Length: 119
Image (cartoon, rainbow, N blue to C red):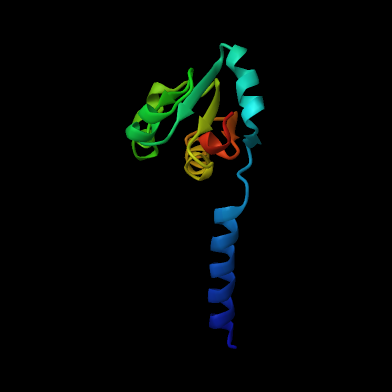
């Protein structure tokens, strides 16, 4: 392999590693830990599933802001308050958490397993 092939291989590996590594500043929490936060008034609860998924099954106090709309609605959230994000399995909420982190949010929690493990 020549040097260019090595550089391309390293870039591809770095890309995939960065996609799956946990984001600094994002905490993965359990459903029970999310429920424990319901008592706190300074926490914002965001459900990033589609409106249809949300309508079929959701929990208060989660507010529905679909992942596809989150970028345009980010200014309706308070960057100084903690944000708890949930989706169906935890994948979309992980993407949402990463996006919120890039937008300057400091304290973000992603519910592991999402609504699929909610009891």
